[in-house]
Each structure stands twice: as C-alpha cells, then as structure tokens.
Image (tube, rainbow, N blue to C red; front, top):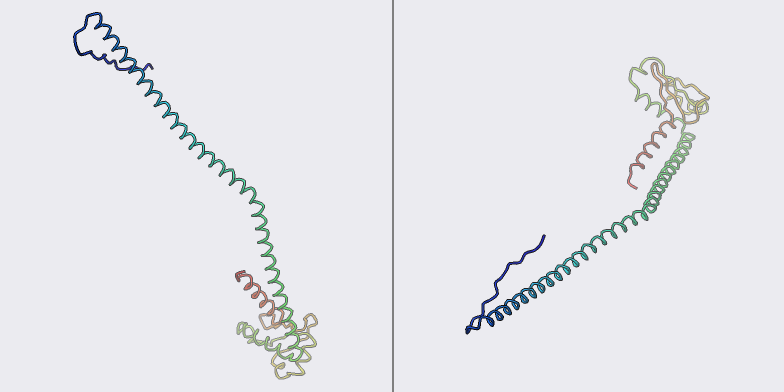
Length: 223
C-alpha cells in the first residue's frame, strides 16, 4: 500500500514587498528549498531507521541462533553420552551381579562349613555318649500330642550299633521304651513311633533346620 505524506505549505517570505515576478521566483525557490529539506529529512530518517532496524534484527538473529545452536549441541552431547554410557551401565550391573553371586557363594560356603563342623561334633559326641540320643527322643515325645503316646508302647528305631551301645550303657533309660535296631538308619538318626503318630528325632533333621535358619539369616543381612 502506498505511503502518503502530509503536505506542508511552504513558508511565506516576510519583508519588503517585491515585484510580482521576483516575488514568484523567491516564493518558488523557498518552496523548492522546503521540499528539498523535507526530502532530505525523510531520507535521513528512513536510512537511520532502516539501519537501526537492521542492527536490531541482526542482534536478535545472532542471539536466537546462538541459543538454538547451544540447545542443539547440548542435546547432541547428552545423546552421545547416553550412547557411550550404556555399555558402562551394563558393565556396572554385571559387576554388581557378580558381587551378589560371590557373596551368595560365600554364604553357602560358610553354611556348608558350619554344617560339616556340626556333623563332626555330633558324631564325636554320640561316639562318646551314645545315650544322648535318648534326649532327642524325650524332646520329640514332649512335642507330640499327649494322647499320641499315652496309650501303647513307644517304639524307638535306632542305628543297630547305637541301639546296642545304649542298651549296654544306659539300660535304665532304654527300658522306658522299646528300642528297635534299624539297618536303614545312619548313626545319629532316630525315629519315634507311638500309637497314632510317628516322628523323626534324628540329628540330621535338626541340623538341617538349623542350617536353613542360618542361611536365611545370612541372606537377609545387609551386604
């Protein structure tokens, strides 16, 4: 759309009266000077405004380009770091899993060692005092319902060698129950049979329970 400018009447020349022709020339010259001044002022203002606008636009474009470039560079750098860090994260997780497996293996070795030592101790104790297995029989009977062994004779199945030694070393205690030699039972093992129930009173079953509790406790402890 075409821009229109406000028309300004040229200034009147004040002073002594002139001849009509001279007055017209002076008036025309004054009008030309006025128009030239207006045009020069307009061009100067236009050029100045254009330069200022160009400079402001340039500065704004530079700032915007710098911000966009930094954002793009940051995003590219982060993406690169994620790509580079993925194998490292995987390696760290594998190392953690290796540590967990190693600690679990250590716990199992500790439990196995404790179990082996406990078996040796039990074996030595029973070899020296075989009648101690009757204590396990009494504990087992105490855990059973009263009516399970109040009627009828209680049978105690033992390893043949231990059964003979108990009858020889502790005949009074052995007489309280019916001791039966059982070739299927290993040393330290014992089964109790009452009128309506049967229970395992051997050492292995008790040792297994203790080892399971120990293993569970080690697994719940913080690493």
